[in-house]
Image (cartoon, rainbow, N blue to C red; front, side):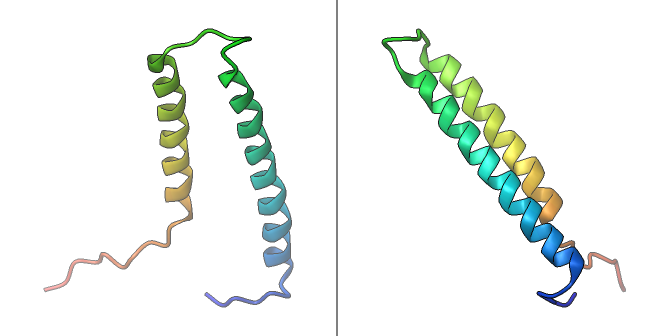
Amino acid sequence: MTNNDDSPKRERFKRLAQSRTNTVLKKLDVLGNCSNRNAYEYNEEDVEKIFSAISRKVREVKARFTFPENNEFRL
């Protein structure tokens, strides 16, 4: 695979990935607002569930970006 910075697919990827990543980061900031104990009541179990779900989804999405190795069986 070549890294052609001028290709339309590359430009589209860069544009969309940047925008979507910034959206995710902003949403995480908004989620962080729920940490205000003056406004919300939560416990450690709630926090673990939230971040477990986020971590699981990040791993799933990251796996979609990995480049498969040639795992062909040979004798």
